[in-house]
View 1 (cartoon, rainbow, N blue to C red):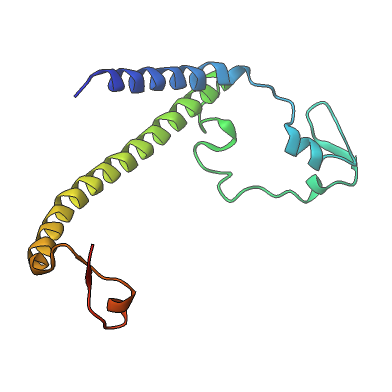
View 2: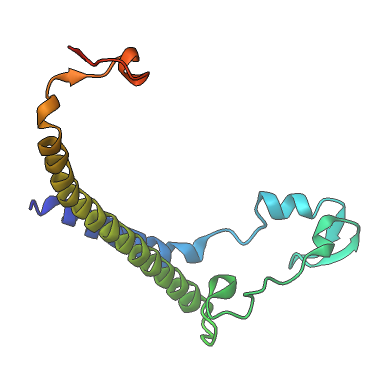
Length: 150
């Protein structure tokens, strides 16, 4: 097997880890388009807390997994915000890579098993139909008429 695809995958994984671990800390803290549109009609302070008005964001509730270890783009229990955000990104990349690699591994195994199993089925069908080699059914044979040669 050629080593170049593995070098490409490892290189891509390293770039993703670098982006998630370091560059993610420099992302904008301002609300994105969805958050911004949900705040229309409300007044907010510098910390983006609603101080008045009426908007859809006032009905927002905490997510069911808000207490999970990786909630809010950080790792619970780590007080350093830079380290917490970077570690959360790195863990997310590694988890996503592991799930993707596992899915591709399963699909590759399934494809190899189907190819090996499919060959035996095709050979058995060819042996069983050896007496009708070259015969193809036409509209008449579908209705119970004779098959014609192609």
